[in-house]
Length: 360
Length: 268
Image 1 (tube, each protein chain N blue to C red):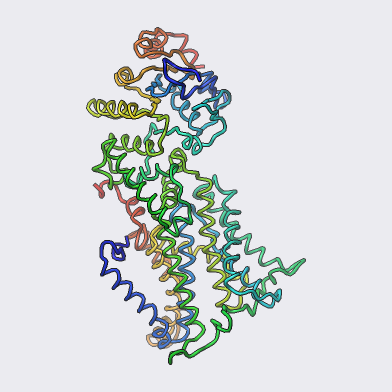
Image 2 (image 1 turned 60 degrees about the vertical axis):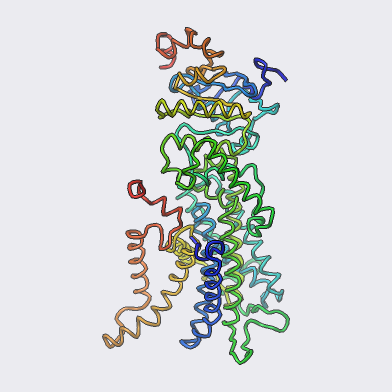
């Protein structure tokens, strides 16, 4: 799967590859600024979605538990950060304290969702998780009374950006002749977080815990008979996935400076799940690709569909939003026909969907 | 501790009953298995053999009765706790992790005897790496032991039928059981495969693991089992050495359907 980056097989190739990727990632925001400053922001949001998709991949891809309310954990992380670092309660804790708190609270919510759904599978689990996602959103929408906890649909504004001492991630700075805007600083932070989470994911997958998740996904009865505590391991999958969501939510809060329940609707959960499925459930690289594609596509369309139509027909015939949904539906149909296991399927899914004849 | 034919008792069952609504799958079944025995469990189809396995391994909970395993009761334990206590099983309708490799299947069997937690997995410290290595090493050894080492990297579902049965035994052995419970391991095997399975079972016993064996292949049962328990309609109808049981009129009746009363009782 990641043989190219396997230092044992290609010691020199791996390092050259890693160096090239590092240079590309370092230069990317400045290159994007040349196209338009908005693109750095869009990239940041894209990376946030990659983080979310990687978190959901633990639950859906590794342990095989279909979760349709994943965005709720993102919301919990986002609101935790917003409430502890904004004028709303007049609290301004530093981010390195809040992010772990957010992860822990999201983790707790993960267990809270996991515990009653332990015996459910497939469609039934999907329905309960879907309900959970909606309950969290509705709570956020209505917890402005009797005590104003979440400020209801108005959301929370003026959320603090990340800062360490006098160094703030939001202000523009010129370092060594390079113009570092706020989004560029966040970009580097996000890339670091992303790397850490990718490494954690890879390691989890090839571990005793990862194998146990795979066993549960394959055959729960056999897994239990082999001594795997399915209850604890399912809860662990929910908890791990949720805490990744919580961390992403915290970063989202800080980069946006404003959050409201509207950012955490069901469609977002579906979107993250689509990213996981489109890219290739269970395969970390596939999930990253899927998340990137689905988060960039609407933006690319926004900037191309209008101008192209105006040049061709002299006016806008179809809204970008309509085209987006059309292409999205079309892409999903094509996927199911030609690559049902995802663009970059995990080895496991590929085998599963192979017909015995083709395999023999 | 009591002894059975000079063996120390490993497992004893007393008054085990299991009902599904009005169906009495098991009624008042009792037996004892000694350390180092190969104990056969036979009976016609639907006699309750697999139900007894499921009750023993915690998949079902019995309505009455108690199992004592290695001096401790098994009552109320979940399947994973039972496995941890030292009973590993295979399934009548092979339940391998079909889309994982043979090696991975056995590695998963090591789960219950290894300790790495989620933090160890993330940090991958020296202890976790060492454990990971030992898991892989032991898994290869076990594949070799049951004779499917050549197919270590093949998917479980692509193995030949007999190899799948053997792989399931390797996966069960990976949990370091004191009692290995095999549900029809010879089903679907030809005579040669069955003969080599017999060798494997004797080897496992020689290496110190007690075996509880459900099997329809009477030739295998009679040649390999020290003692045999016969179930019919959920009741114990005979117990003893293979040759004694073979001569028992009740057993012959159960298998050949000679006793009309017995059949009527079943239909009711």
